[in-house]
Length: 245
Image (cartoon, rainbow, N blue to C red; front, side, top):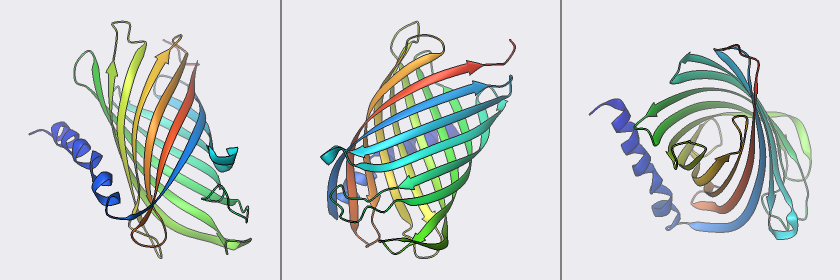
């Protein structure tokens, strides 16, 4: 069995892990909506820059939950493989929409990632993303920010299928599963798992929109307690091309 087949088997195995874990745990259910804008700037044939802004809110009270901004520079090793270096700025609001203390906790997060793509046939593409986050989270006591930052590493593996619906390949369905685990002091090993299904439509070669549903399981600080979040996400994609053909 080749490596790609093994990785695809891992996808289907990890897809069902959260269902068995969370069914045996204390779970808090929440509903959110995310709005994301992403711009990819092709600098030349090998380099491209991705800029993202992600706004995440609870349905309950239309309350802010999280604001994230990513910048990452990618280098194409070959048409099916690229590596990236990036920087994330994060502003985490309370984990409950009815929280009485409205504390926003900033985070600085450098990261590195590797992306590999395999076209299985004309209509199906399988991709793998490995990302390592170095997380510097501002210290706080739950009421106010304190001096300094807590640090931990996070390791992320995302496996994704894309199913192109028509010959023009201007529309596709995405099915993905992303697993995240931590290392460091005073953090849980398991962080979260995200299962995602979405429809993306390309209106032009440079603009597309995606609407998806994300089921997010995240372990809380207390062992055997979890968040289970049902999320609707809207994404707008834009491409800017400075590369010469």
